[in-house]
Image 1: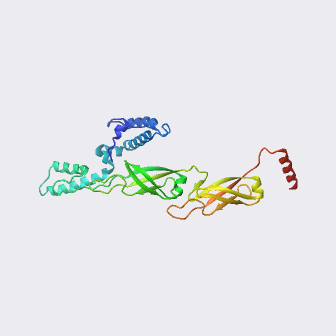
Image 2: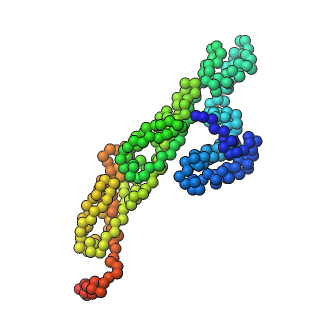
Image 3: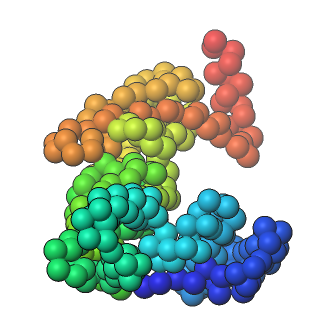
Length: 294
């Protein structure tokens, strides 16, 4: 992954104080916030970079690692362990012949450059950095299993999204993160799903809930109504004298269960009784007669 200069992103010097970092971040975050730049992909990317830079530089420990190791700062602990091990080995060798500071410099450089050190040297393998990405989907998109192409770090990745994915769920794509160093394994790609619900249904796990308006006459006399679902139209039989707030369950008409092919939750329908409005004189007369019968 290309080196990112966090100081340059925030427009500050390497001697910037904690307060300088905070001020620069707030100023830029306001400027590039997605709410102020709707549908602006460049501003969205800039906002992510600003947040990333602030997360690293505002943390004293992470900033120290970044200042010393640059783009490799997340591997600082591994580098330190390797340096300690090498010091120990060199110390043992010194009793048999000694070594120079140049030898150690070569070793440390090899950790970054990926070159084998002098005769008898060995490479230190490092796992690549993990990548994180977010994918926004509509609720209807995750009702069925489908494929999507993502662009991560300028590379297209074709993935299969199983039906039933939840909002906020994270899946791991192995070895699609940053490239490993010195023959080390690649990092992984973690994808977080942001599922937006633009449907009339409320989802709770694998179950779906919906409120349906029912007029007085259908509620009293009974009838059939049609309900649109993710899987087409469903015919509902309304029983005579159905009361307001009545709930019915349609078994197996809910949302697909994640990675359980052919298994679905249930659909719960709540009837909301709607009384007629703007009654005519004749209607009022008839309702009056009806009330006398009761």
